[in-house]
Length: 540
Ligand code: NOJ
Image (tube, rainbow, N blue to C red; front, side):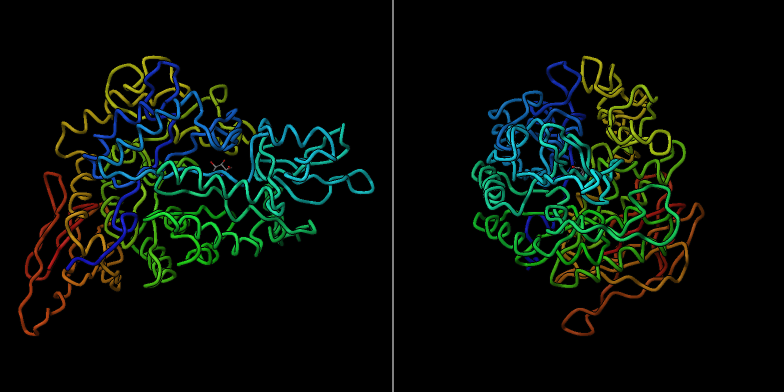
C-alpha cells in the first residue's frame, strides 16, 4: 500500500511570475490567458501545483507585492472570469492553484491608506502604523527599511510618520487593529470560496511589530548596509503571530485539502520551523539549501539540518530558485553547460520534501543582465551597482526562437535574454539529452515511485567527499541516490538494500535512472560509477 500523502507533499509546485510567463494581449506583460495556454505544458512536465506571484491589482511599485485591492484581479493580468477559467482548467488537469497573499502591507494607493491619510480621526487611520515624531522632531525610532533608508515616512499634513519595512509605497498594516485582522481573514475566505487550493504568505512573520516600538539594539561588528547594523528583534517576529497562524489554519482547514506555506523574513531555519505544525503552517521556506555553497558536503549538511528540523511530524520543502534571488543557473554555473544543473535537479527532485520549481528552471534559464536604465526593480534602482536587484531572474519565459522568445508579440516589460534563440522550451523538447527532458524524466519517476515521493531520508556518511549519497525508504520501496558534485568520474560503493519481510528474501538494487546523456551512470557489483556531475537512482 502506498503511503498516503497529500498532494502538496508528494507533488511538485511550480512558481509562476505572471508578468513574465506569457503575454497574449501584446502589452508586453504576461497574463492569465497566457498561463491557461500553457497548462498542458505544465501537466506534461508533471507539475501538481502552481504558485502564482501576486495577481491582485497593484500600482507595481514592487510588481504585485504592493496590492491595492485584495479581492480582485489586476486588469493587466485579465479578469475574474479568466481566473475562474484558470482554476477550472488547472483542476481538470490535476493542477492546484496557490495564491500569493501579501498581507503585511498594502499599496499606498490602496483606498484604506488613502483614507488613513485624511486625518488622525479617520476610521482607517489606525489601520496603518502612524506615529508622532520624536520630541526633537526625529523619526519615532531607529527602525530601517530593508529596501533602504529609514522605515518611517513623514506626512506633513498629519505631522506624523508611517512605518514601511519595504518601499514607502508599501505601508505596513496595523495587525493589532481588530478590524484589520478581520478584513485580512476574510481575504482567505474570499479566495477559498472561489476554489483556490492554498496560499503562500508573503513575509508573514513581519505582520506584528513590537507594540511599544522600541529601538532595535545595535549589532556588533562592521556592516556595510545600515539595515544590517541592527538586531531585528522589535521590528519583526513577534509572538502574536502564533495565535494568528492558528486562526488562519483553522480557516484553511475548514475547506478540504488546502495548503498554506509561509515565507519567513529575517529568520533562520530553526526559527522558520517554529511556524510549521499541525495547527500552524503546513510548510515554510528557508534559504539554507538554496544558499549552500557548491559541494556534496555542504548540500548534504543543508538537507540534513532542514530534514532533521522537520522530523516525522512535518514535511520539508525545498527551492533552488524564486523571484528574489539570482537563478541557480548563474549561482553555480558559468557558461552554457547544463551538467551541474542536471545534478541539482537530480538532488532537488529526490530529497524528502516538496520541490518548488521556478518558471524556466526546467530549461536552465539564465539571469538576464540589464543595463542600469533598463532596471524595473526598486531594489536594483536603489542599490545599483552594489546590488543589481531582482530583474535578472524575472526575464520573460523562453518558449521558442521566435521574436521575444515567444513570450509576446510586443516588446516585453523586461527584455528577453539574448540566449533565447538557443535556450528555449521548443529546442529542448526536441533534444532528448536536454535539461528539460532530464527534469521531465525525473519528475515522472518521482511520481511513479513511492520511495521518491514519500520515503524517509537517510544521508549516508560521505565515503567520497565529492559524492552525496542518500537513501529514501517508504513502506513498500527503497531508493538510493548518488550525486557526483565533481567534474571527474567517481565511483562509490553502496550498501545492500534492507532485507524485506519475510527475512532472508534476497533483494537487489536496480538502476532506475542513470542520466540522459551519451555517457551515463552504471551500477555493478555494489558499485555506482558516475560520470562528471552524474546522477544515479537505484531502487529495490
Ligand atoms: C517578499 C517577496 O518575496 C518580495 O518579492 C517582496 O519584494 C517583499 N516580500 C515585499 O512584499
